[in-house]
Length: 268
Image 1 (cartoon, rainbow, N blue to C red):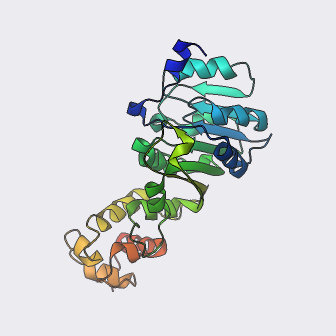
Image 2 (image 1 turned 135 degrees about the vertical axis):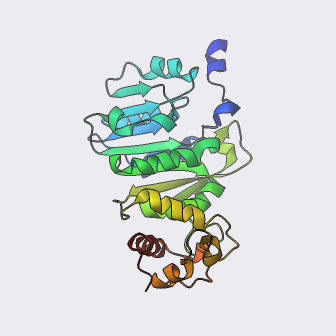
């Protein structure tokens, strides 16, 4: 590799880049994804191509997304000769995944998400989850804890319930900082997400109510909503929810019932 290529492959802090270089963990991700010849795999943040190289061998089609303009020509040079490889040099936050997938079906997604925009990308993926059969995503470990936090967990928040509404989740394994270059000060966690069909009649309202409910986690549900609804106590009780509970103690089903009660206006 010449000096120019070395510069191109240097991780950029502005993109939150930490390249996974440990082959053991690269293979573990591939094993969990289990790409097949009749499947299309979309990879967000192809980086230096560590995953991409193996995906091209195993998947029917590989669609890589990479925003870093220094890495794009390197990826094209390495993989452009393969007929089952496509590269889009665009921001994952602006991608219409159904559009780039085209007529491809059986679509899986894999990503080592940049720490600084991982939750923003996750919310984008929630909005378009019907495109995918499965997602294997790597997050900073603390973010993964919030995403998968169950009822009553201290880390349970807005994002936890939103993810629960959209996906079946499974924490797969942790990845130490030494598996990356440059070496981050934090651990990462790989998570499997299986999309669910929408179970809420108004997802925008559901998000709004969730956001309000978790605005001040130390307050009770009633105190968080009494400024929003004059009949907040009645709405909660009609939903079978004790007004003195805190937001993290509610299940997705309870939030769903509460939103449906608000929609129907039934407080008797």
